[in-house]
Amino acid sequence: MSQGTLYIVATPIGNREDITLRALRILDEVDIIAAEDTRKTGMLLKHYNIKKPLTSYFEHNEKRKTPALIQDLQSGKNIALVSEAGTPTISDPGYRLVHAALQEEIPVVPIPGVCAAITALSVSGLPVHRFAFEGFLPPKTGKRKNFLKKLVNEERTLIFYESPHRITAALEDIREVFGDRPAVLTRELTKMHEEHMQGSISTIIESLAEKSLKGEFTLVVAGNSPAKKHS
Figure (cartoon, rainbow, N blue to C red):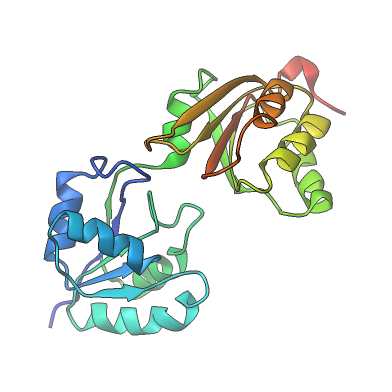
């Protein structure tokens, strides 16, 4: 019996129209969809009239669920992995399953689409020829500052994800460690209340003070100029 294929399927980060025709076809053809958020994925599938079995696959069960999904793939079933939104494995669960599948020589096929980091970078107006994606910063101030100090001399444009309740503190720590660099903060990308805040980090902090902080944030920060490197 031939093995199945693991498809890594990117789904919309907000606007449901931001899904590819290929992604819809794959979701309709696979035997199982492993989803970080079965409720949210279920709503997406219902919108496109796709009826497939869903199984949960998220941060706290991926270690336990991976062996069973590998067995399904080895038995010939095709599986689509989807995250809550965007491209799976990018600051989301999935690495463990992809790694295990490759170790077992199971085909792993990317079905590309939206990624919040690239979406924000594309409209940032900051240099895009070289960049570094750093995901979520440590939640505690001390560890966050130590993490940022390792990046202070990085010349590439930097991209971070952050939650609403930590974004202001994170920006204040970035300003303290990096200085008041140019940056762009995006919120609710592709959704009804999409917003882009551009300017210095101080300007963005001032803008946030006047807003209700909801939604997911993607922050793009200018890299360090070679002439301004810290010793």
